[in-house]
Image (cartoon, rainbow, N blue to C red; front, side):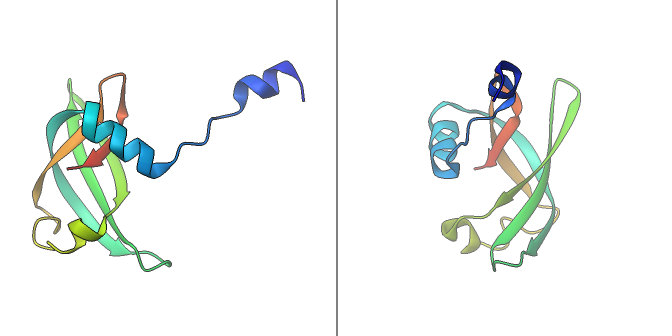
Length: 95
């Protein structure tokens, strides 16, 4: 493995740790649910949109068990709070 290969290698991030980090340190903005669907693993996935500094960000997230208990809150068209990383604005989760 060469030097450039080492630079290109991405660090694997645990989704639970990422979620904890954003809940503790992320900034909050408004977003809207575009669509939801059930994936092949039986998880409910939400597609959402939020805008920061005039730039639209579209993202997907697997809903947690707690979020799945409130289907109206995460229905298409619903307004939601989005937590995002101020250093990497594309890194976000649904509140």
